[in-house]
Amino acid sequence: MPIIIWGSRGITSDLDHGDFHCPSCDCREEFTLKHTRPFFTFFFIPIFPIGGGDRYVECRGCRGTYKEEVLRYEPPTEGQRILGQLYEELRTGTSLQVMQGKMINQLSMDPDKAWGILEQMCEGKPRECSCGQRYHPDVRKCSRCGADL
Image: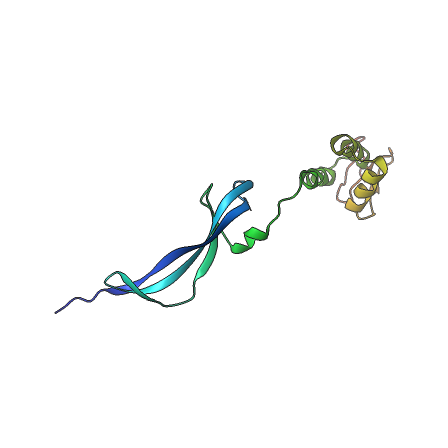
């Protein structure tokens, strides 16, 4: 009785390449856009495709694979990163006055503009302590005098 060997396997082809911001490497890297499609095999030879395929991006630096949407991702600017860090610090108990000083020193920002951004981060509802310090609405205790807000 003859033995017939059949099955399926994925065949991968390269569609495109270029540069993108890799989420794992956190920098610009080369990528390859790949397409994998399942094929019916007969004696381990691919005969015809048996379904749709999957497209994905592979980073040439770390070899990580990502959905194709990663090609449209633009990383935050240095200023946006610093503002994000300052926002987290603001929410964990640093006063608006201290944060304003950091924004003036680290970002060379105008004091009025810095204060306006801080008020936006507080959604216009900062908490005020009896000692005069102002805080993000999530903060419950003054870091200067220890009073409850």
